[in-house]
Image (spheres, rainbow, N blue to C red):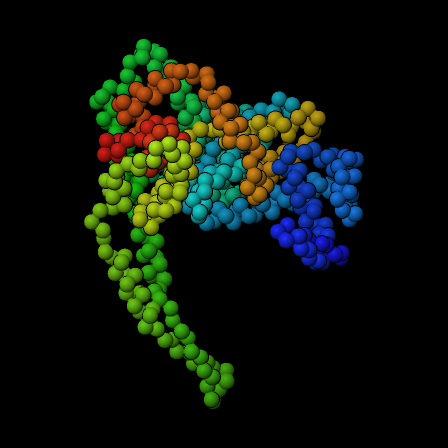
Length: 465
């Protein structure tokens, strides 16, 4: 125990307080630093690093590479328990998965990423697993690996969508999983949004089709109109499922009892072994129970979805289109659209690309460098998943927004300027816009109900659907 002097900058006044060196906290943060910066375990043996730490505090004790490895594993286990607990309060967790082969270890890995929106309407992403999948990578093996992951995390009844690329073994794997979960009645919307293909691959196919048709419209007018009707019907079908779930939840709560009661116990004069308990129902509980039952039984003339679609599109102020935050909008309108906001929360967490998996593979290439090819498979998962969880814990990002956008620009640059022509044509026919239900803002006129990550100008939903 030592004394520390704290100087307040405002009036240069000082205060003296007790200071206790917390070695356990230092080791914990050192493990977080190692995971976040992807340092090798031997970093703790660095001579200059240890001199630097001793210069900061005389209480510093060197941490060996074995100790820091164990501390990283402990941090991984602690954050994994926290994440499992968080999933219990989340309604839907959407999955992105992909395969990657390490050029240094010469073995294949599968990454499983979960996306969800928390109670404060923040879009969250977590790397759930990064594990080795032995060859051959057939659909059966991939399906088995994914199912084990879902069971491990306890989310086998919480996910509705899996985003993958166009590999054939994913078609087989997801067909197997869909059949299994359909039998257990764990898929929403009949499993029709279960298999989602990466949007980058879809755009690539659109460009190819555009070239083959010599820049004619992708969809004839009649087909585009049929697509609009199909999407509108699907939108109402999904909403009706949420209405049924909402009604069932309130019914179960009603059967559990309305209001509060008090129990008064008194001992019998003749026998102290028996208690006489009398339940008293308070007047406030009767009133609240009556009001609750009355509100639940009154059916509105129009549903949340009808009201939402009848409203005009949200138009941002001049020059502030890029500042529109769809999450903040839904957060502010949760009470207005009580059921629809639950649907939006689940749909908005569906990513339309596999960029999340690709960024994890980039981290895997840095962690499994030529000097660390002997890392155990379990250690690789600890390092990559742990790094992702530590970043979320401390609200840090590995790269700046500009860097991430730069990566996306490079990945999509091969599509060329033809993407703009395709997008414009799709917008004219209103076919592509109507294939995606919810999303974030556009670049010019954001819409509250548009495609996630879309760059298409928003239109009035009366014309949009």
